[in-house]
Image (cartoon, rainbow, N blue to C red; front, side):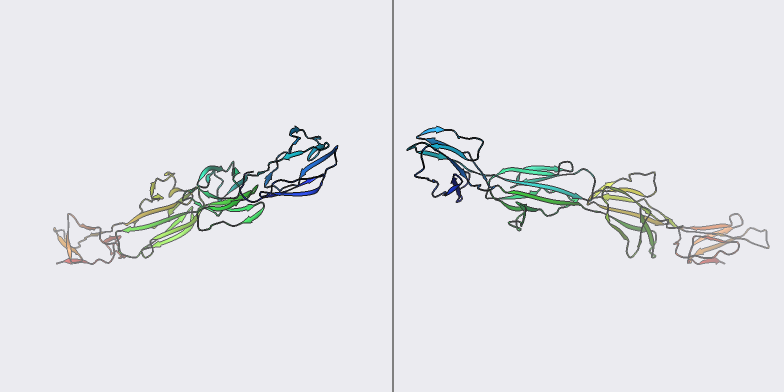
Length: 368
């Protein structure tokens, strides 16, 4: 029978004379039947949750066959004084759960694993997205759950229909979806996973100056992001997974030595996938966080001064200081003096016979 739950079934003789049997009173009896007449014993359809067995009969303790196998029910000839004893066994129809996997955000091949009651693994793929668990014991609660698919996926919620009617999770406080598989129930479930978008962040570092600065970066030749000393991090969100992106700096202009971009994908260093192309090429995998950095260095300045003398051909020498120190001497044999790496923070105009290159805000002084 396959169940300890109460049950009842109805039988008919010649399409009428209903008799109901139950687990408490499982026998039906028809008395005072007309002898030498064929009677048809049949069961009223018990419903989809039951698998109906075949009726078998004994006449006076001797097995007899169905008098007409092509007709519904069991046909038996009741001879005078005969005792016809029949029996039938119904079995609870086992349950079934099917789950269909849907995926959004990628055309790449995929696979996921699901479990029933923490085991009974079934793997679904883009080619075969449906898992099935058959022959489930009726009137039992089953837990359907997905094995963790990894950080690159947003896991959707499982939803189920039992015999085409929506049902809720039997216990939302427990992992997975709990569903009661009633006798013969067809439980149809589905779930959708979505590929997580990617993200790129870039941090700008600057050396060689304490002055304010700003630089512009682009992703795939657009999507401009400006970073500065007050806000040195640029971020690009919601990037399409499994796509190569090119991160590049807009020319910062003269006076800067541009560094090389370096990147980590999920904390693992990666190389530029196409070093022959401008910028840094990186593949944004599903759900990945790409963390990049670059350092620009302020180019050093230089002051050169050429001393000219008029009115004599005698040897001469003159001393010059920069900001009151760092003495340099120009002479008729070596009329040019220079100071390397002064702080390049503002411009100064050259005088006739003298030159300043990339120099700002420094004071030259001629000594006696």
